[in-house]
Image (cartoon, rainbow, N blue to C red; front, side, top):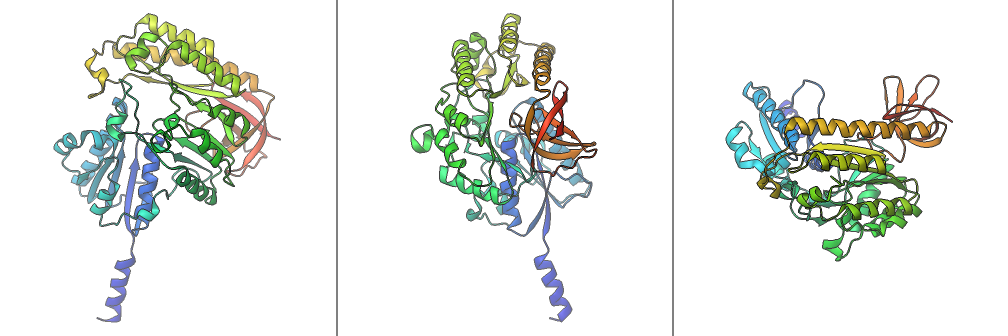
Length: 445
């Protein structure tokens, strides 16, 4: 072999093959993609995540969502788009993974045969094998962050043991499996070394944490251990199921300065009749008692919740009861979903009797109520001094968040870049000068 031939062989051997990974759906899906990117990177692949340009890689992987109708439609449209590009010869290989693939693999294989292979939510080793890549067990918990480098999601468990009648998550993610505390602490330390300052704890069901491994709920103990990690300054809790809520976490939240006074508590509804149909395992009275206890134990806490509108049998009376509840209990943040009739859930056997137009109208009415609540709450913040974590610079503003706000879904604090400089990922003290329904305007102190 000549010297030139040897150099060509060497170049081919060490050239990183490019893969583009498209992630749809929730933050839990995002963590899965970050884990996959790390595995691919250690197998000599160059990975681009959610590419913005038109320069396609030869290999595309779509990590899908299958939660509700709109998410499924987005996933299918994305797959069809790349299938069309493959037919045009613009990409060579197309792989699909994630929740939609887990749930509808056989149907998708029949309807979209252009996809080279479909993989479920727990089949990363098989996907890597398809790419002639080795699954490296020593990388478990290691990831390439796709979020800004100063915050990261920490998935503390996988799957769900709840039996909510409307929810297909257990069909796609299986039974609840907690990640051991020591492994999560190792992950947190690794993230802190990368510059992460805020951990956002996520799971399909946060408050169930530990029951499978330790035979008791261990979220409070996990929080205590994570608070010991140097470099982490904020710890935020998402997706806390209200039934059998582990109230022992409340003193920890109150006393540990690193834990944000913030809790995402998806209630879904307040009418006893609707809650019973949803199989939420909690009553209106118990829900109200829990809210009052949380607010008593953790003063100034910001409560975020989500409501599910248009569940089968939801009458105008049920909806009005929900509206009055929202007005009375004044949640800091509120998200609204419209009921999606999902196959293989227990609610699928019930007649989906709320018309789509009425679902949309009720969702709009509920958000109008929340808009007024948010407007009034933000007005009271004018003149206050607050600590803000700066996320990005955009349209003449440095954009940040208080401890009462999670990225992408909650309020933001806008700081004009005129005569001001803020470094992305830094905490800054600001004074609130003005407000709108969902944003605050501030000046650095």
